[in-house]
Length: 524
Figure 1 (cartoon, rainbow, N blue to C red):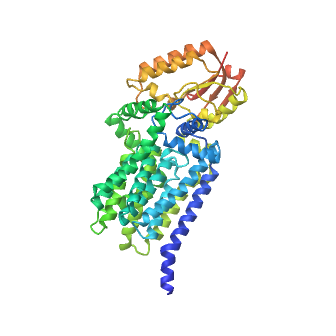
Figure 2 (cartoon, one colour; figure 1 turned 90 degrees about the horizontal axis):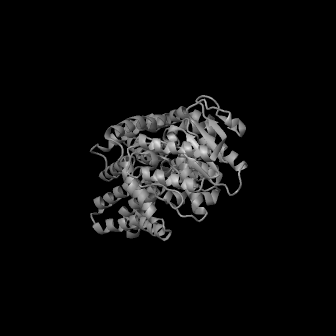
């Protein structure tokens, strides 16, 4: 009897206790750094959500090649927790806890609870790392929630044969898809898994019906809002040009440069994940487990490939599969290290925490932002917005020439131009010149009260830049600002030093000392 009770504690109580402890620990770290300044994507999502909450549908006042699901996620979070940086990051914190629990439930379908807990705990640590920009509320973080819910319901549906569960599973993957387009790869992998084990086309079609429903509803909503044509251009026509613009060499360079950066925070855990993948190929591995993990891993890798940019936060989409592979390694180790495997994992886990301890426990929110994003002007955007809000009326009109939509969010003002990113205007594609002329016409027709010019390379260009487009844009800007504006602010971002701020007449006398600076202009 005592042995049965002991086994029950080990199999059921301890795994949940471990997950709760780790979830609370990660929450405390995230709560300490809630005030980390928003980065560009967060700024875009927050600004678009502000527009939605004010009654303006997506794409009408701000263009983007991203699907609108993430904007509505932000709108929900901001309506509950407030339109603040802290509110957004609190929403991320609670989402992260839900994902940790969902991953454990998925892992329990593959492994015994102690091993499933190892997978879930591994994800909690990996998703917090600076190497995947884990503190920022990127779309990938929110995509994981419906995606894992979809896999959980699908696994239950395959076992039970319930048709409604297949539809609901597809619906979850459809929600993941409209949060971010690469979510479709997970839906496809689930469809393949369903067909593999049921062999019935009808069940797959039922699943696919649920998968496509959110997209259809989204398109009907945008059609009713008279935004469907704009949405279609930016998310399909321009997006196709964008994802096909990288050469093979550029893609390889990007992968080689970004992948080491994405795994450096917890590199030992990634090594264990590779071992877990090798364990899948063993003959004794259960076929059902092998097929699921292989399909999940393939979908995860495919999800970071479109566009060949390999930004660090893209790798968040690989973390659930990597964590399950860590579970696979632990499951396989029972034959070789039956008593030591969990102790070894605890040592690796503690070492990974120690490795990331300066970032987790010592940095301030502003320092955490600098650690993740270098000299990008994200902390400076907060001070810039404070100055403009203090020196302008409620009816302020503003335009930001640079890819810093977080400024609009902080100001709680609508942009006078629909281009919240400058990248599409600078890339060598057939629509770029028309986009530039569209922006120029909008600015000249109604010059905004304030004009912010971000002289930072990362705010204008990525890999694919046209000299002709640069000359056209910057040549026009020099004439335009000399005609209508005077300098009222300079923000000089100097590596290794405090940022210099100059306002009013002091700004007119200041010459930036670095190559990264921001000019704030006010209309005469």
